[in-house]
Image (cartoon, rainbow, N blue to C red; front, side, top):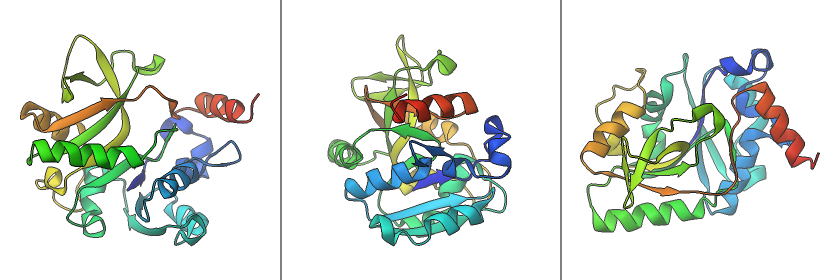
Length: 226
């Protein structure tokens, strides 16, 4: 699942007329970079949620055949936050664990790794609820989000890291959310962390939270070799 329903307030005025995942870097929309990397990693069935200017996303990507994937859409009248959006899309995602990627990040992470790592952890702990990819803290998130200790994600530690927006989740994590309601992801993750049900990994490769016009411009210039 690619999360693409956010309004992109910090990206205004660019997002007044274009949904954030369709903003271009390196000659193609942010979301297309994800789709191409997911296809390369072997993912064939994608779900994309949308709200703000969602019709543009569907018109641009269509059913996904030109990328070698099948895309289904989960439409939200009003953005439901991360966990709410995922819970709303569960009928499209099925009963097995699934990969979720934030639509407003850029990375060169190999998505073929994360499913295998989740399965590996489930073999050790059948009650596993999530596996998160963590990265070094960028300037705009110096305090970090979570810690990583012996392969487990914890709420706090001496060395904090930033959640990349890439994770594998069991549908069970969203059991308490009523479809169509707003809900944040962090409280669900923290509750699962307290029970030792969230594993993680550190990724040292390229990762950018494309949250402002300035970061969008910097990323575009770097991809064009300028």
